[in-house]
Length: 152
Image (cartoon, rainbow, N blue to C red; front, side, top):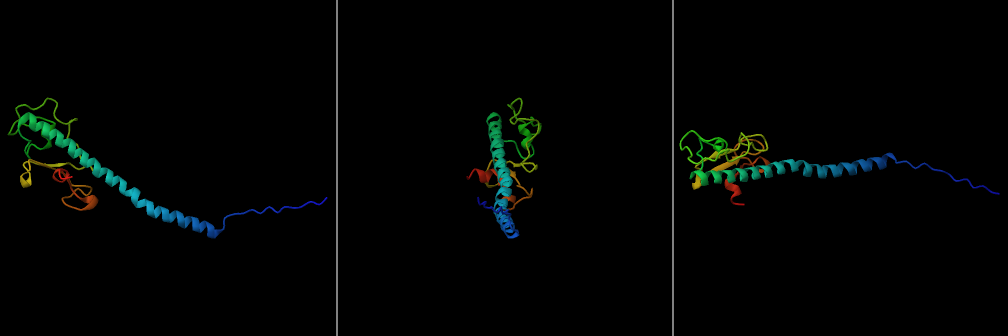
């Protein structure tokens, strides 16, 4: 009886093969990283737009009840607490027009800026200064304005 001997070869990855795999993973990471890192900024911009729409709805309810929008001095606090400065609303809704006891901040933690009357004959303008918190800017740092949203 003849016995055949089988050689068992341990096949392991060579250094070159490991380097190729690492390079491929690096290329995928370089491609996907910017896409996923931009997602939080897009989500914050979308949240700011939704907040502005919600505040606009509260402003419209305020106007229906009181005949005019709060002026710039009264600001958005007029949606939370009855203004005591002129023009004092006559039919201010008990409990206010927004939930909570403070005006919401934008997704970057900055206040929304309210002006009434606004430029270009608009009744009001509501603005988030975006991620940089400063007037102007472009892209992710760009302002988000109720005037721009009404055009969309």
